[in-house]
Length: 246
Image (cartoon, rainbow, N blue to C red; front, side):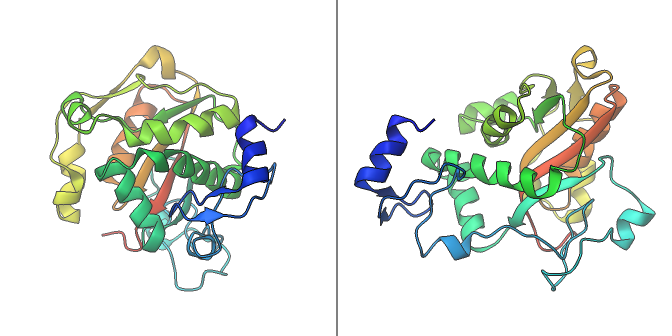
């Protein structure tokens, strides 16, 4: 059923969730995203030309997804990766605005992009039993005020009908921000930085969620921690994937 906000939007119009521009009223029961004519073509999901395990992209966006050579030689510790698009342009602006500039109003839009990413790339997976966000260390959580990965997870978990394990995976060691490090140091920076609740994880299918994947060092260490704790399967979802994996 449509809520009061949906009816008001249909009657009176609303604003673009990305840029805030006024929009004519439209009501789409299937859509979680409302974008203006300018932002709509700038925020399109990636449908092809990528590795379904690590998300590495090729120039041809229409190419059939194929496992890349690197993942054939050294598979990641998850069974599949879903992502919405490349970390560039409007998508990058939205993610950095939400994460670093406290534009919390963007949260609902980013949640909807996570849902769409799962629908596009993860719908063929076996349904997870628990959604787990990549955690922040308490020191960084206090400084930022919120965990962007947890906020991204909420709508996705509700759409899947499974709980969010907000405390199941914890960061037990404070590390330098990954963005400040060269690619070769990122994996070492997060080694041993996480601990999982074995009782909550044992024998369960886990969907691990983060906002951005660059080299994948943080996501890999989280997935390995969950696997060691006894998870029967780990899949991963991010909103954005950088174009190069160093």
